[in-house]
Image (cartoon, rainbow, N blue to C red):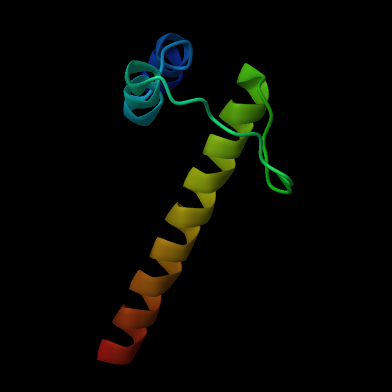
Length: 72
């Protein structure tokens, strides 16, 4: 429940790869196509994260139910 609040703080900072590239003086090249890009906005990234969480949780629940059905 606290993760969205942390996301507000963490999204402003660089991740490890970005920091390493900045320290090495390497520029990130622009991507030709970003078909599944969720944008630069907080709400777009939050929605993508929530959608991913729901998808993984649903597939995990389905897999567990299938395992239980096979076992019985």
